[in-house]
Image (cartoon, rainbow, N blue to C red; front, top):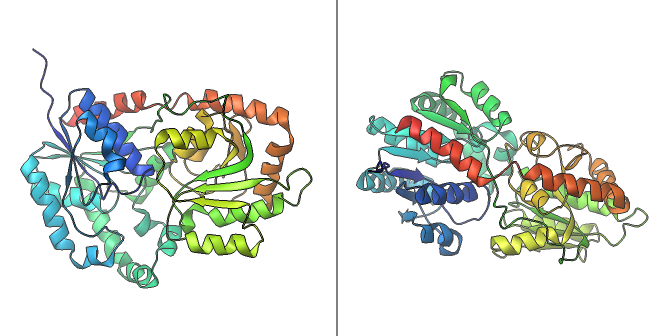
Length: 394
């Protein structure tokens, strides 16, 4: 008789924004269910449109309700919010709990302390950015939340230092993340660290020769300061001054607190008609079509731990221009699948973009290289490695 697999409960902050950690959660949980693992996802809220495919595969979503962690009201009633998560997880009774980004990592640690027999896997894309990364802290809005977090930062750091060692396995999504985790948490047993690269869906993200490439740059990201979208807008202004590049446009797919400021920046640079911000929900097919219709993809974040969007773009044959810092040094190869630029220089980005819009031979070579390079990142491999981690602790 086939072995009955134990159930797994994922703790995730919310499933209200597509992309990033939520994409990883949905793809991994869906494949675990299809492989015979009963999977529940406990979070505050879920958007039915975002979780629809995973739910149809058999992933059970349990929303405890309440404000999102981006709201001050979440933190004012944190004990109640944690109790809701704890109660939901206890009712499910999974022997394996997988905690995801902050504040779900705290949920997992507290749950482990109260239920020592549970095996805890922490998917740590990076040490909690809102605690350890100054760029993220400085991007928080409104101002009172940013200053409140700065005031409480020493306490939050000590909580993370104290609780991280209770984790049975810590999953990093890049070698960069793995090193950063080890450096940030020296008390963590390095034998508990596992590297699991994220993948993409190659049945959705692939070249579409029938889609006409427009003379446009595309970005797919959350609109916050860490993503450095303002750098790309300023670089566009420089690029459009160069011969043969005056018609290049920028499409930004995403939503976030920086939207108004970015629109004001575009207006001040007389780029109102050259910059489009798209904050509507796109399914994966719509997103793939957007990537295939663009000539260049830009990812401007500095030291981001991984980043799925550059890989999705490359799989569509769209060269990626990135900083070459953090995880992008592993996901994009300079001169093969894309180009690197100096993250501190708008002109450096404009120069690399000009090369791709004026040198057809270079674009064709990098487009072919991007497709080949992206092929190594796939969800089947991610599932194989991640399920192996779960089996270790089951």
